[in-house]
Image 1 (cartoon, rainbow, N blue to C red):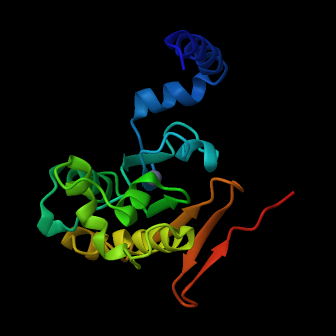
Image 2: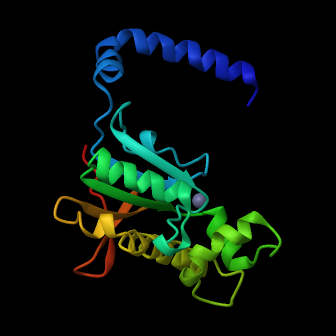
Image 3: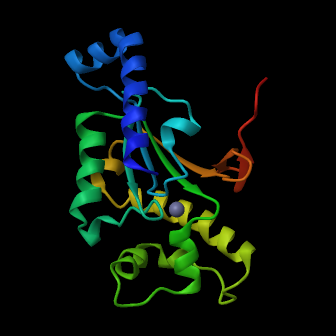
Length: 200
Ligand SMILES: [Zn+2]
């Protein structure tokens, strides 16, 4: 995408900004009060605000390769500061961990990454999501993607400030399907993934 397209995009945005000035000025003057922390993948094709049609101010967002949340003992300052600020300061009511089909990070994890890379170091927090040694099987990759969503949601509970906030906080495990545009959520009681109903 040439830079020119981004400039044109901004000009288009500015038009919409002016049309929705009330919302933007309210956000600018009164601060942000998002109810949702979204933890998603950095993948350029999975844009949180697009797939849930959210406005500015709706989502506090953290994106990284393979929507990973290193557990608290990993002492990853970037992810843990986002969690701390979202939960203790913004007092979000929901944390959504959203993975996606075709995730390059998890595919690399399953297929193998050069062990002298930063990506390799990062993916160690998803290692337990690996299910099989059959490297070329797509269903194994999908299984690992799903496992990883559950694993990262589990990592959230390794933080005391999250565990202690569970009365006011809900953790959601979501999977976005890049081919269909559907979102499925993991239902703990039934231990299965359920597609979000589509309405006309
Ligand atoms: Zn991804």
